[in-house]
Amino acid sequence: SSDPPRKTIVIIGSGVIGLTVAHVLTSLPANPYNVTVVARDTLDDMHSQAWASPWAGANWSPIGDYDERKYKWESRTFGHSTKLAQELPTRAYFADPKELDKIWYKDICRDFRVMPSTAPLPLNMQAGITFTTVSLNPLVYLPWLHSELSARGVRFVRRALESVYEAALIGGPGCIVVNATGMGARSLIGVEDTKCYPIRGQTTVVSAPGVTECVEVVSGASAPSYLDPTTSTGHATYLIPRPSPAGTVLLGGTFQPHNWDTSLSVPTAQGILARCAELAPALRGPGVQVLYHGVGLRPAREGGARVEAEWVEVPPEEERGGGLVPKRAELGEVGRVRVVHAYGFGPAGYQSSWGAAEEVVELIQSS
Ligand code: FAD
Image (cartoon, rainbow, N blue to C red; front, side, top):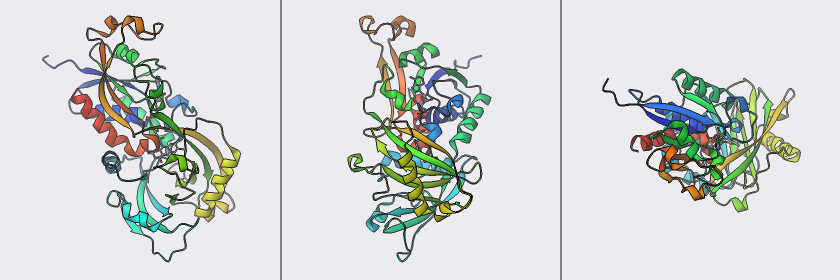
């Protein structure tokens, strides 16, 4: 036939970003790409702290000030929300009423309202809003994405890569590599992005059927400090009822930039429960049970996420670092690899996923 050969795309990473890129790629008309996902951590590793995706809330919850890319990625993701996304009524609190003027997501979320100023507010908060958002359970959503992709013929390879060049060897000459490695981008040879840093997040999952609303503190001492992490108290305070299993609620949390500690802190867990009970007194009621705790590292990056196409040169023989980098000849004539980066989404990987993946696919199509 005269059909052009299908181009091969090798995605490194099977977190929410890598899987969503694969989903958008395999949704294109005429199925133009062969897609392989190579990952160290995947569905069998839901307890691994070496990746972020299993540990997320994961609700669509706007973070920080307006930013053009964030607006694009997050508004598209809200509009996309899959059949697994559940509507979630939300209350959010602010330390300063002036912050209400800066809210950029009024027209993206649904049912946006400012609380009457006479309403008594918890944790010394000075203003509040309500809106409806969407929420996912990563432990259900990631397997669903995976099964969609398997049904579409995506190949999965479970492997830890040392370098971005190894991915190109898997795909063969002319392939395009998508780098969706989250924190892995810091150490993957050929990328080694030292702007990447973790933001530690500790959470507690409870059974509390009386809690049906998402509640979050946006600013003040109980909230993350997005603009100036150095002044952060490390607190984040939020409750996210899970669509499944019914009656479970994720309580957060912490927001600790540059903290790599993946061990559980008991005093922190006690603080989370106490702050969340201020927001939802039903947590103090009988029958509320702690199910488990979690600690995850949000894969952040100075200057924000990197979504960008790049040619990565294959280093000359003498700089190949003890054979970690394949020979130029093995990678075809060009001696360079086309890489589309998609990492560094920090606290917002789920809520950016569909919008960012569409941008990655546009970069692949124009490569
Ligand atoms: P990851 O999930 O970390 O995946 C990286 C992938 O790359 C893994 O498969 C890993 O094995 C693979 N990899 C890395 N290096 C290599 C290598 N060398 N070789 C092979 N494979 C490699 N986001 C939201 O949008 N909403 C929320 O409510 C929310 N809440 C959160 C709460 C907490 C407590 C935490 C910790 C995070 C939260 N997040 C939330 C953030 C979200 O979890 C992340 O932004 C998102 O999971 C990042 O996805 P990713 O695919 O970029 O990276």
